Image 1: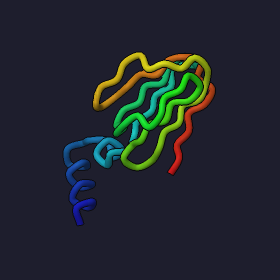
Image 2: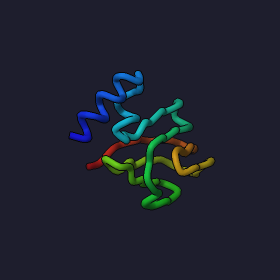
Image 3: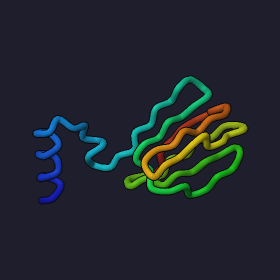
Length: 89
């Protein structure tokens, strides 16, 4: 019932469904940067792999010399040599 209300409110306010439902938004800028919105926490951090927990999935960024350029409670920027970005359930 609440999900139906949320979907109707999002539609009436012209908001993107993914943002309203808490889905992560991932923007890849070439092979150097990944911008991630709507994550919950950093699950693990290594130079070759960064794992983030989102509300609906886990996000895994793999590559070389990875670093977190900045993060807030809502979004973050990962930089380095990005090899792959995948989502796990």
